Length: 447
Image (cartoon, rainbow, N blue to C red; front, side):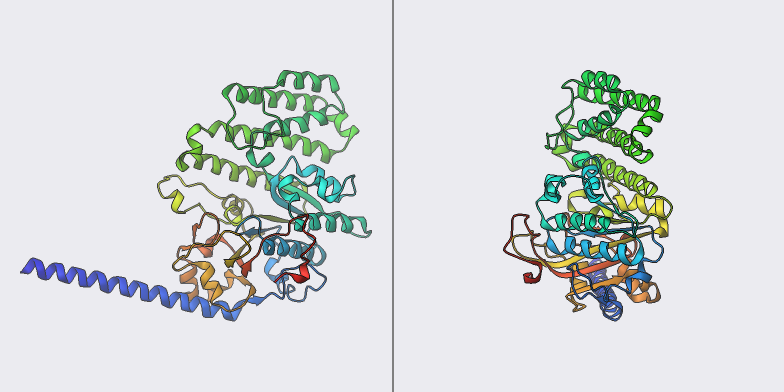
């Protein structure tokens, strides 16, 4: 009888505890929703244009940050890339930002930067294939080119902060070919000798598949990088005279990207493509490399340089990936934003984009209890900007932001909003990005 009474009491206590816990969580979410409704800035539109009146309050939000990192919840949606274009124009024209860096390969970004600086080609042809699919990307670099063509202001720059071709097998050869082509400007014989020694050991730059490099290929890659570096150092003065200090720096950093690729490919095993715990070290390697590339970009922009980054929320936020697929992984990978926060501190502003629904064939969000996107949806604004740092003055709202919540995206990660991001942009519905060949739907016709 006593055992039954104790068991009943234990069950009653547990049920009471769970009810109390859920009640506290509900009260915290209600407090957050009320706080958000009082402090959110409504956004008139995500579409680029000349009217920045609704964005003017962001001047105090951005403040003196040298890096603004803007994330998208999924690739291929229109609203995040349209807002990226609008925000970049605002940051350039109103706050003196000098560059944008996208989640695309560092090596292939050189031709785009040349184009926006007035170089040859057309917007559609200079963009990497993945970016060229969408009109919003073409519009971004065409606006940059037009802006640079006008007199009276500093040139703005374009960069990619990812590994060459996103870490695909053709990336190492692409990075080495760039450096060798540059070396040819002062020492064609040495460049040809190194190129000949490469032979066919590495996959072609046109090889866009995800995969592994063989051990012989890795050995050739490891051996070739220092050869090119030595030849560039020997010819440094002649190379700079032939080009410029900055072009020398771009070529030299391509060698660093080749080193990053080699490091990540050394971690890639056959199990990496079957078991997430073996791919986690590769993911960690890539995000760390991207953060290093951002550091180089900011340094290259000089002491007055200011950069807008744009990539997936999962990269730009200050998080370790915690999702269902990572449940059994002991050492969870750190996102690029984690490394950037430690490098830039308060000089970094992280803005994650959130949405509660999709249409037009985009992936449908999985239902998530106590999710960030639904909490933002309940605020009742179709488009808004919310500075999370202001919640420090509201203990109840801060309590909700300081707990882990699921957030929409391909990985449905759990994040702690108060540390993962500084601000959210919320858009009620995501629609597909505009295909470059799609002439039927203009911005003004989009919902």
